[in-house]
Amino acid sequence: TVMLDLMPLADNDRWGAVLAYLAVIGMAYSVGNFLLIVALKWLVMGRYRKRADPMWTPFVWLSEGITSLYEGMAAPNFMRYLRGTPWLPLAFNVLGCKIGRGVYMDTTDITEFDCVSIGADSELNAGACPQTHLFEDRVMKIDHVSIGERVYMGPRSAVLYSAVVGNDAHLGALTLVMKGEHIPAGSRWAGCPASPDRA
Image (cartoon, rainbow, N blue to C red; front, side, top):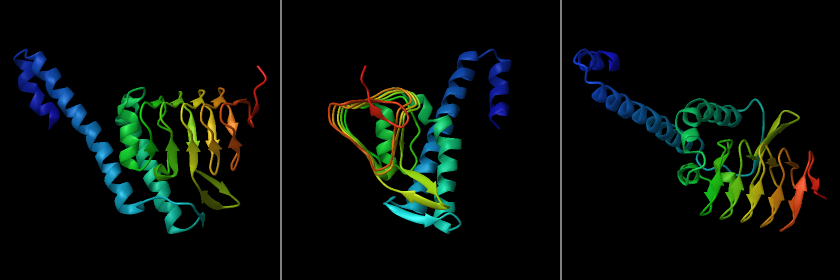
């Protein structure tokens, strides 16, 4: 019906109205995708908590369903346009994350939202990932990822579940912080797995 509505405007050379109409429809579609995922996340999953469930159980299927819908609808149609703006942390907080003020995020790679906390003035660069779950021996294990204040996460770096990154820590590009590790405040780490950066 959008095209049918636009045809009379285009026939009358009202291109400004065509562009305005498309902008409004596009924005409504994007925001609608996000709001649908927010509603489904809270209605179906509620609040994510630390847990371990066998792969072939309803919880895992529902969780993966919400993740797939988020990654297929909200992330490409809404969240990616907020990357690098103050609005992306706010959108993640609506989904359940605990993200402080002044956080710069150039990534939409978060799944179990309630299990992520990021301190104020931290920087998560392109593709950086607080990874709150892993499948181990056909068991989905979920736990919290805690990232302190003023932390720098380089592009494509990842922090696995149960890990804590202290304030003012620096994780280089492609750094992998293993599950359960504690990165001391003010330290510099790089590599896969992460080790102290001597550079």
